[in-house]
Image (cartoon, rainbow, N blue to C red; front, side):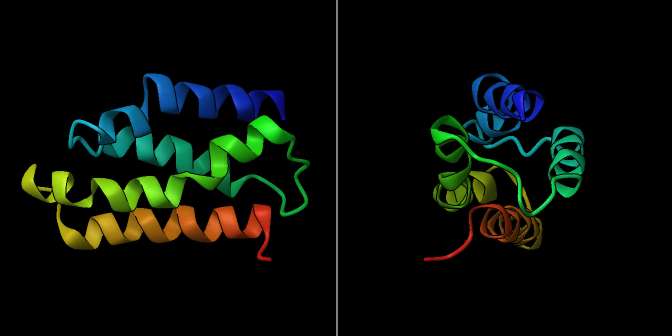
Length: 96
């Protein structure tokens, strides 16, 4: 879990999510992050910090949609990224 937390912190501070703020959907960073998420078991133990790093991802991607579109990212790609992270976060965190 410590490794996952480190990967997520990096993605928010200097990696994939950081770059989305600039309208840059970096495919290599996305694929690497996707591999990490796909390897996670559904019953991963989440502490408060992990929940903080995860729950905001889908909303954040939605907020960046206009910026990404203006930067030339295709709507289908944005939807793919959003759906992947939404479904993965739902799998890990569950629904109320």
